[in-house]
Image 1 (cartoon, rainbow, N blue to C red):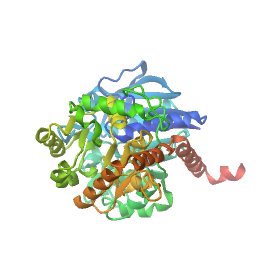
Image 2: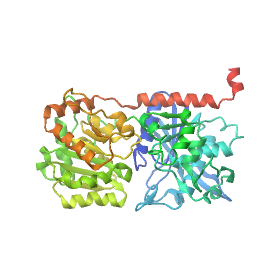
Image 3: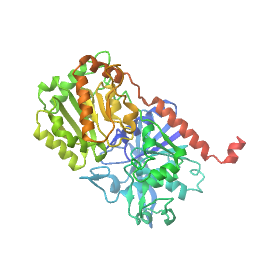
Image 4: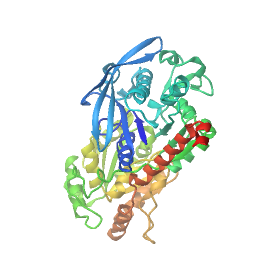
Amino acid sequence: MRILFAASEGLPFSKTGGLADVVEALPKALVEMGHEVAVVLPRYRNTKVEKTLVPSLTIPMGDTYHFTTVADGGTLNGVRYIFVDDPASFNRPALYGEKGKDYPDNAQRFALFSRAAIEIAKLIWPAHVIHCHDWQTALVPVILRSQYTADPLLRQVPVILTVHNMGYHGFFPAAVLAEIGLPQSLFTMDGLEFYGRVNYLKGGLVFADYLTTVSRKYAQEIMTEEYGHGMDGVIRTRAQRLVGILNGVDYSVWGPESDTLIAAKYSAADLSGKMVCKKDLLHEFQLPAENLNKPLIGIVSRFADQKGFDLIAEVAADLMREDLCLVALGTGEPKHEKLFTDLAKMFPGKVGVRIGYDNTLAHKIEAGADMFLMPSRYEPCGLNQIYSLRYGTVPVVRATGGLDDTIEPFAAATGKGTGFKFSSYDGASLLACIREALGAYAHPKAWRKVQANGMAKDFSWKASAAQYAKLYETAIRGRIPKAARTSN
């Protein structure tokens, strides 16, 4: 199969969250299965390209036309990369916004990108199936099914839409529809209209051939009012076309045996290098060496409400009374950045924080921390808890979405389990869970067992990629006209 990915970010070129990891790893796994894969991305600032493929691609946008460039990003791990090179839209300091505020023209930026991705599928890299991701590319199926129905090259191409996080919709004023060149007939309850505004994600949910989300549990959760973010009714109407496929990880990138970004390599058979990594991590955050024998909790995250930081704020005083240290890496909402910077100022020997994203430091935290904290309000899949398992860094998580699917509670009596988790979304439950983990850490034999259990788990992309390939085949068959299927 020829599979075209369309996404707003993807490593090694751009990243704000776990979407970028998936857009790097899943195409690579599909190539290893024998498929042809290309990835279309915006060309953001500092992204280098090899050559121009199309110097001027005509994109209709309302009453005007936009002329953008398509550039070749070369081939990595067998995956072809193609960039929509439009400096006015994408040559900016950040991907989606700055200082906690979205760029005001995000509707136009990602409508342009979606239209360009469709033209790339038609003119440059013809695909058997298009795989889109989140609201930024959710217009691809909307545009295809409303404006390319007569196109012989594209009308039989199915679109898969993966929802990585139902909390982000692409929510814009009604006037946007005319500005991006979509007919008013789409502004209905059965289309893109959502409480008087345009909702890009809703459009994708309605028009895509199949929907996927990134864990089995999250696929169930988004059909409920609690986790559906107003879309639960739409999701329930499409339940027969919804599949939960757990994200995998690329262990060639995220594994202590081969990681080139950490201070020392190690494995389940020989954990001695992990102490070297812990010492290095303390040094990175300028925390006293006396913390080497204390439990070290790590956090790598977007600083967003979703991630449970209000719970950490609620129990911070009690947490700081425990004999531990904490390091956090991330960027996002100012109130959450302030939470960690304030803790670092108040407890300079116990808390270290780095505001921003640093891939090398993320690897160092995974390798050097003893525990990894993810108290999320909701978590579609989560990747860091899976990375943590392989690094022998014991996850402490809330039982939601992919966190619930991937982490088994540890029981000292049986020696089974891979981490610690709590269910109720409140500070008391979080604190009790952390204290349970601290109690296990105080018993080296039990701690080595939970580490070993986690390091033995296999969440590689092979099984997940096979599920996606099967879904692509099903979607392609569904687009073939009935007469053609009968004749074959």
